[in-house]
Length: 259
Image 1 (cartoon, rainbow, N blue to C red):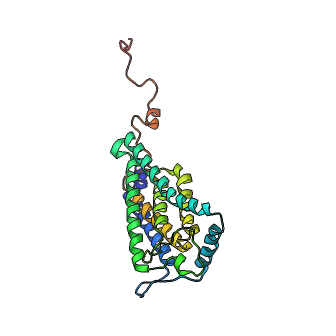
Image 2 (cartoon, rainbow, N blue to C red; image 1 turned 180 degrees about the vertical axis):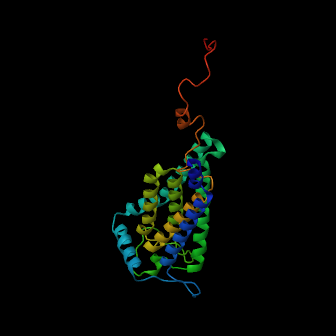
Image 3 (spheres, rainbow, N blue to C red; image 1 turned 30 degrees about the vertical axis):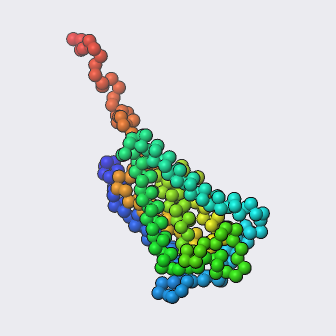
């Protein structure tokens, strides 16, 4: 009975259900944040609403600070991606040194990378469809602390937020204890894109949800996933050894039954 329950618990269909649910939730959320643009000529300019107001507040706080603050924010924006990338390499290397190519940590790191690439490609495709103008160009009176990207470099969704969330969520699923590090890093990276003045809040939120959905789907879809990606343990399981009665092992050399 327990073996049958274990098979159901690790059934490939459970992973596929989770991956499908992650993609469905991500697609629904991105669609809800979609500013329009499909079948419309010319770029979209978001000049009002909650997201535009939030952009003005956050980017205004950064622009009112000292000059070095903007430089710090720009460096930190790229630094979050570098830190997450290094963590991914560390997890992969740890798995390779452990059980080799079959180590769940290595497989999970590779799947996280695949999900991140897919998320980035999807983000680029969405940019070509939506054509949303950058807030630093669309909003009058905007004073970004970072250089505003050139025309044609569209805003929705944020590539930085997409990459950061994909790496963070994938790593959190592969090594759950890393979630306390990766998720705050991804959140900081997304927020910084608004603070430096190159994205609306809805851009980074959509990018984060897209990246999280793609990475989660890639990791969850792996049919050989076992719990929180722990390497397989070799040797006699403790439960099995506990079932062996004391003294039932091989008799000592020279022993026998006395008549």
